[in-house]
Image (cartoon, rainbow, N blue to C red; front, side, top):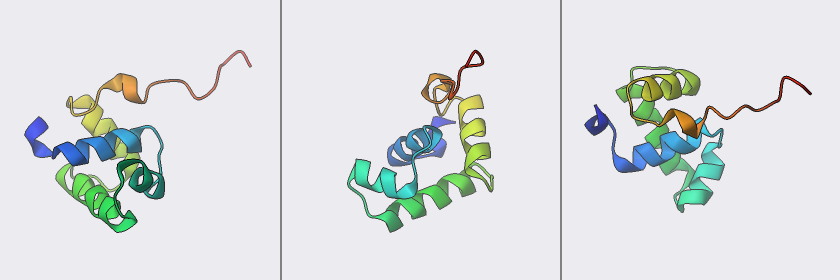
Length: 79
């Protein structure tokens, strides 16, 4: 299943899972915004999904993305 997406798409998917915007991903990887958008569209198409959240979930479930990359809590239930 890992051959489903390219190394660059895996990098972008990982950053998407961490909540980065396309602009932020472009800056981080030294790509143009439009290149990142194209990769995002390709990821969604390859995973047969229409939303980033679903794509990240599916990618994690099938082993394309380590769960630890985005399962850190954004808030603490205690406060």
